[in-house]
Amino acid sequence: MRKQWFEAKQQQGFPVFVAEENGEIVGFSSIGPFRAWAAYKYSVENSVYVKASNRGKGIGNLLIPPLIEASKLLGMHTIIAGVDATNQASLNLHKRFGFEEVAHFKQVGYKFNRWLDLKFLQLMLTTG
Image (tube, rainbow, N blue to C red):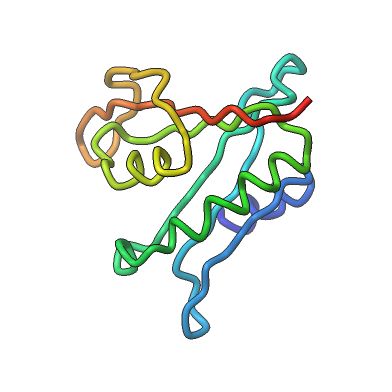
């Protein structure tokens, strides 16, 4: 599944950034389409993942800046982050880089035998 995801990113022209420690991948980040329709072509959604055993070490702080720069280089207008409402570390991480909470959806995800709320955070970019 992850290989197909990576190939799709390559085909779409979106970058994937990888954090590595001692030859092991400990995190990654990427951007991709926010919605498939043409009206949203200047909006991207980000993905940031840090391996559980490596969280709290500043890896997320290394993975977000290249996403912002790549989004600007691609001429994007905004980046949207969808974050589990209980994931305070990810919410704080995004807010450190200027993302603002713009929406809170109640019980839109179901995982680990429970309903999950989803928060959307948004970073406006200074592009034309």
